[in-house]
Length: 469
Image (cartoon, rainbow, N blue to C red):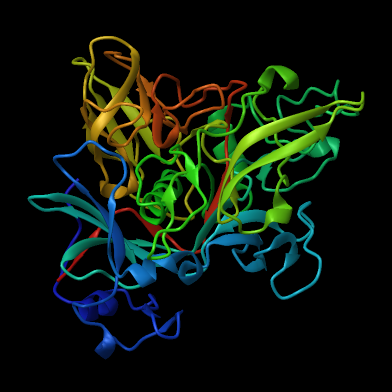
């Protein structure tokens, strides 16, 4: 797809988007606030990460305003929220999500809203390359001299996966341990046991239906919408300056106050203890850690004098267990297998209040193709598409420890439509992550290692870039 339109200045960008409130970062006051257009120049602060094109290592070099980068989570308001169906939200206590930031008990069972993770201001993303580097950057205002993507205020299931109201068929981010919200594959046998499915994420439900069930919450609610997946990948790559979120966790910050490393391989695979389905962690597990970043464990009392410890749970400013846990069938995207075994990628250009088509390419636009392979298998990308807020490989030649470090399952099919699933599941190994993809299944796929996260945006989300001079 061609990029959208060229804007000659930030002022013109604002004039053509009169409803957009431009925000700026004041590094002295360490806060974000509305700024006049006269104060916005080509020197608008941004922060990012760049990788040398001649090198294969996943770790990049932070660049731009490093003070802004060190404070980016607080600038964007990353963390836990309770979100209502009308998109209003209340910030949860950054030290404990069972309280509100303003005080008082926060119920995560659905009586006060969806337990979500996200940001509370819009922000901008740009990527570009020069002779030496590939670059990604973010800012609270359009980045001059580049194509900009505007990311609205948005959020997703704080536990990385959603539950299902089985009485009303509504996808929710509730931590509710009644049978109405039973997770897993809805088997009641273990309701009173330590490995109960009560309070767990839903799995093994038709993925197309999960999008329909999400939309019952209201306008711009969805199940695993692709721009949300892309935005999470951007934030983790930039904040950790690493394309491999599965790199070993390092609690030490750099001299500039920046994270390094990653968040580890991911959660232990204990599916055999939970009826051979992969919804193994309570949706409110680690809520008491608040907006923490790190790798954690959960200990379960088995009731027979022994315990089960589930280790390796990643937490990114309160977002828990989103990769290496369950496959998430992305919605708003379909791939078409072609006669030469390439996979043409079709996306919904703008996420609005309209229902999202999940069954075919009608209303979607082609934005590129995943290269052909000879046989169906797992492959690793060396170069990725980052346009239109959808990441997919453009060139093979990577590995679990180089470039993007995420695996892609390619069906090598010559015809047919496929869904495109993201993040990978707990048995997958070192190829999971923000750019992990599986193109082997129909959009309606249903299995014990497939779930969904609930997500929302408080305004239309355009996945086409705007040039700002």
